Image (tube, rainbow, N blue to C red; front, side, top):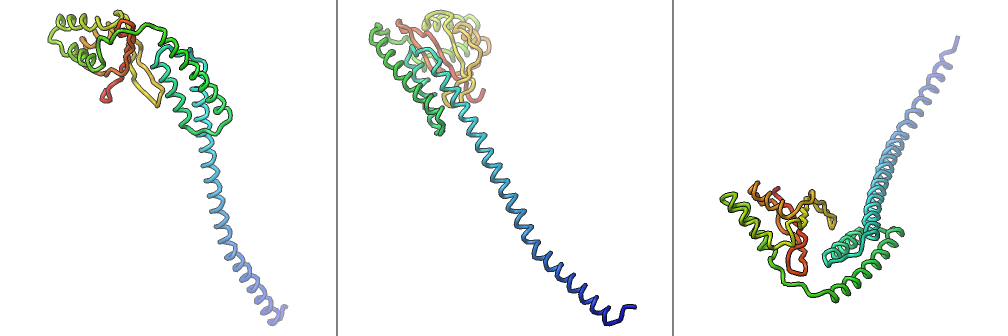
Amino acid sequence: MISSNRMQIFRKTMLTRGLRFFVIALLALPLATTTGCKSKKKLAEQQALEAAQRAKEAKIAEAKTILENLLASPGATTTAQLQSKKEQLEYVKSMNLDDPTIRDLIAQVETKLQDEQLALERMLNEAPKPSQPLVSSSQLDMEFGNIASSVSSDDANQKIDQVLQYFSSDNTPVLVIINQSGPIKDYDKPTTIKKYLNYLKDTQKIMDLVSNIAYDDNGKISELELSRRKNY
């Protein structure tokens, strides 16, 4: 049989060992908690970096598409076309992308637009001066309103005939902007001025405002751009 003294010594030894393990476990608990917090913070930082990288790659892809389209586009034949291209270029520059491919494309587009600027200036200087526009944008907005508010179909038709005199032909293209993000414009299905005027007569609603007008040498409208009102 184990003597009482040995039994007491055994119990003390086991108690000491248990207390030692308990203390070690208590000391290790904050370390495990701290390590877990650091791991979560590191993971969050990594996820944030990956999200930022994806956003940068998306911007680079957008910028590349715009710049390549500008390089592939035909030379501008009007001041409005050239201005639109310049706005698209400035939009890309405003992204401040530190990417060698984008920097190279920007330099190419800048050179192309400079050449187009010179060619357009020569063309405009050599071309005969156009007549004064027959109608302004504000006057045209008013004419559209008069057609939409006509008291009868005959009255509307008479006003349509009067407005058509301001255009190069009944088939003069009309473009309606339905959405715009920076310099990028989304257009509704193209139509003609005669169809658009009849649309105003039928709906009796003014949904659009004149945004831009291109005139021919006789001062008549050769292309009309409208923008959709915000409440439509």
